[in-house]
Length: 314
Image (cartoon, rainbow, N blue to C red; front, side, top):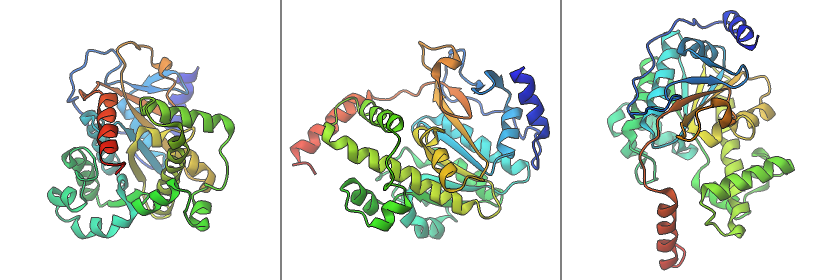
């Protein structure tokens, strides 16, 4: 029954053609996991075709594509999604978490040379993976008459918020003056604690929670402003920011409740989990991929904290 309802909804979706623009991207990462390359729709409890996913994109004013930053397959899917929108007649406006909003001028001044854009934005120095992973996303948008925008909270504001010394008007605009519901607050604390390998001092976690909330809100503000013009808007961000329960989509529901938002989580399949429902993924759809090889993040964090301590906390 749920699958039939989903198919009826897809046939009724307005505006943008549901015809597939191109086959899904060929995976870069080899994976024998049974979920790799498949698209799960949690609400219906069924898998989707890429054509059905394109139709869902086409019905949205805002498409949030949540990634693991260093996974090349995630960026390949993001570029494919942008190309699909362009092929269907849209002119997508791409907003990047990776670019602070006070760098919009640098972005616009250098957008004519995509090969050098990463250097112009200090991409590597700011700790993001190779710009070449993101370049096809930008190229797909610009080739289709779209635009690129910075979306993230500027560094100065981030430091103020972490120290609780931000101007009152900034706290109000970002919703920091309103406490989170207890359940959401506890979940966010646990997410930050576990994602930092339980190594962070408890005294540091409240500041990290405030920064996470502020970044979600800043990206939501960016997206809502862009969505006032012809779109759709596509947000490229980490999967945590794409969550529908407490990320950018939830903030958009608060500040722009009329927007049609669709969130795709790009998730690395876990060898121990072959049931898609077991992931309990808080997204409108999930695209499973192989897992990128990377250094143990806990060992990396331990090394970073040790180096910071040796440098007197700097």
